[in-house]
Length: 116
Image (cartoon, rainbow, N blue to C red; front, side):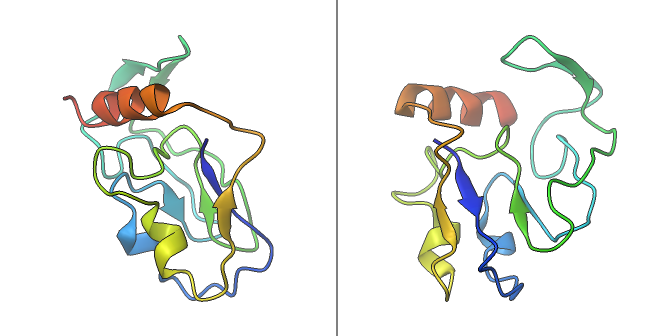
């Protein structure tokens, strides 16, 4: 399951540099699949959607930092626990009940994002 940042976020930014997939962005900032990954140009996502990894995507939140579910692996393949949750001073990085995924799915995403 992906991690979500709740509205309790104080916008301290501690989580952003900890993400090995660059799945965390400041509120209102555009995001790209290529950021922090090996993805380039046209790619077919695991769900079959074709995207250009370099195209700017619409921010998920305008108010607080946010996590892109399609890039979040809960740090599987990198760390034993989600690093955003480990460093958050207000405990607002929590499991996202709307994006429940098993460990195999998360590891497959990590391999896809980093060409492994």
